[in-house]
Length: 194
Ligand SMILES: [Zn+2]
Image (tube, rainbow, N blue to C red):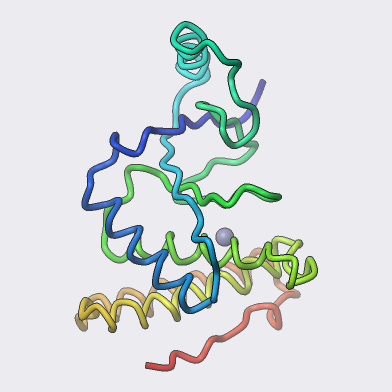
């Protein structure tokens, strides 16, 4: 089968400081969005199709119960590459983050962005964010706004990082408008209220 394969890593395969940085941002964003319980962070890493088969075989040898399906599976296949993070649609209260991400504020941004996608799935939003363009036009600007707020609150917003966040937001906005030229109104600008 075509597609991209990702291994779901056990949490202890990821350095503790990356996990705690991520946890802290997710908590901050959940407080801002009144979101409870917070999503579970699932660490993933890309694997080849052969490794995916091996992982599944190893699982079968080591577990008596069947391989969980869907997002609980030790290996996931997805049609597109997941370069940073992903929020599976439907019920799972999970955000997936590539285990190699460690840059500040890249990791913090992805955690914030994906947590916004969890918020978008709330029944109270009535499916408003079901289309990708609306979802991303909301989750990107929200992610940069809340990131700035978070970094300020935790005294991590140096001038260099502030410039980087602004630059990333602007280039993401251009990429968004290039991908969906008709969708300018769907890019919501969030006030950064510090
Ligand atoms: Zn997104």
